[in-house]
Image 1 (cartoon, one colour):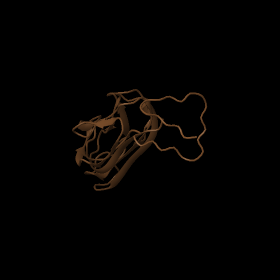
Image 2 (tube, helix red, strand yellow):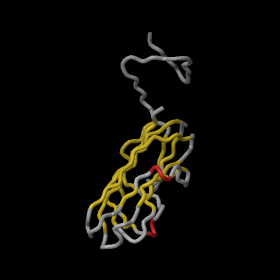
Image 3 (tube, rainbow, N blue to C red):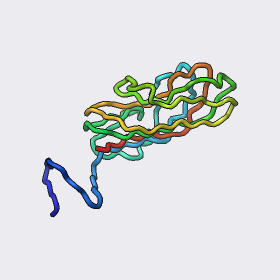
Length: 167
């Protein structure tokens, strides 16, 4: 028996779905084509900017600089990030650079994010990636940044930032 809602509706109790469930407006936003920038210790915790909004569906929005995604509905979201580029100069190859998600300007569970280096040689390529679910309230905003850059520098050149509501 099909279930139809004309406007808002609620299903209570246990519901089993055999087959698939399509939700045409499940919030999802993806930014890509990272703005090329030189990164050094002066850029720690600066939100990374992107050029394109590739996907924008449902109650989710992005600021004009394309560095901040705001969710419109509370729930569990899957956040996917990739930042890549090339090391600039010799610099410190022992930096413990953190690729992190900032929520409302802070970093929840800072130890949950990967640590890496820009590499050891000039023009060496790097790629920082993480994927994690996170529980968010309506109107929470998310930004992605690099942190703990000390003696090295690099140019970020490619990447994406995606936020999708799971439930």
